[in-house]
Length: 317
Image 1 (cartoon, rainbow, N blue to C red):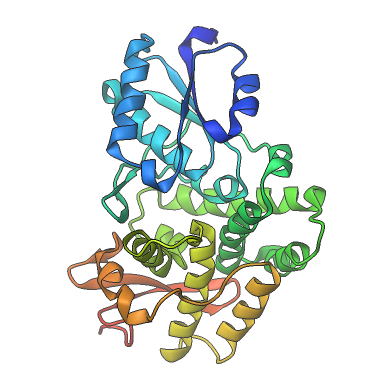
Image 2: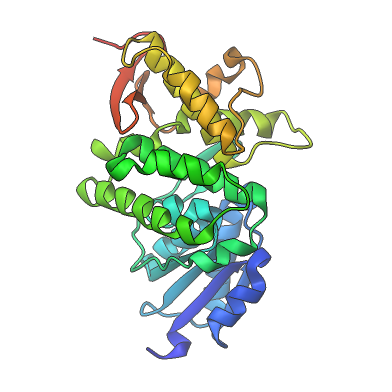
C-alpha cells in the first residue's frame, strides 16, 4: 500500500512512538483527553484530512489510547461518508477494550459518549512493548477493564491470574502480554456475536453505568485529582456487586471480594460522593431506555446477567 493513502492521527503524548510508526506519512497530533473528546476535535480531524487530500480510499491510523481511537474512528466514519481506519492502541485500557470493539464517539456536554456510531477498524494491532512507557496509574486504570472482562468470562482462571499479577511489583510485562490477548479475545468474541449491542454485547458495560455517572459528577464538580475512566470502572464493579447482592443475584460476600482484589491491584473502590448525587446521570446513561436501565449484574466471577431495572433496587417484571 502506498504511504500517501495512510494518514496517521495520534495522541501528542505518544508523539515519538507515533512518528516512528508513521515513517514519514502525513501525521496529525491531537489532544486526547475527555475535555477534547468533542465534535470540535472530530471536525478538526476531518478538516485536516480534507487539507491533506485524503480520498475515499484513505486509511486512517489511530495511535493512542481509548479517547484517540474513539475520536479517530468517529471522524473516519463520517469523513466523505466513511473511510477505513485501523487502531494502534498504546494504553492497556485501549488494548483490552476501546481499541477492539468498534464503538466510536464523543461526549455531549458532561455526558459520556452520547454522539457516535459503531464502525469497526479494519484491524487492531496490539503492541505490548509500548506499555512499559506508561505511568503506573495509567496501567492500573487499564487493569480495571481487564479485570472487568475476566469477571464476564473467566476461562482458564484468568481473573485470578490477573489479580495475582497486578498485585505484584514490579509488574511482569512478559506475563501481562498473554492476559492482554486473552481479554481482547473475550471482547472480540462477544462483539462478533452481537456487533450492534442488541443483547449479549451489553454485558461489556459491566461497571460502566456507575463509572459514567462518576465521570459526569467529576465534570460538574471539578476536583484536583479526579478518577480516571478505569478507576471509575473499578468503583462501578463494586457497585454492581453490591446491587447484585441486594437483588439476590449472587451470594453475599462478592462485593467484599472484589473490593479486596481491586485494592490489591492499586485501584479505588469507593464512590467519590453520596450515591443519590449520581441519580440524574445514572438515568441519562445511554443504556437507559424508556425509564428502564439495562444493568449488568454479577452472578459469580465468570458469569454475568443483564437485568432491566426501573429503580436500581428491584428488577422490573
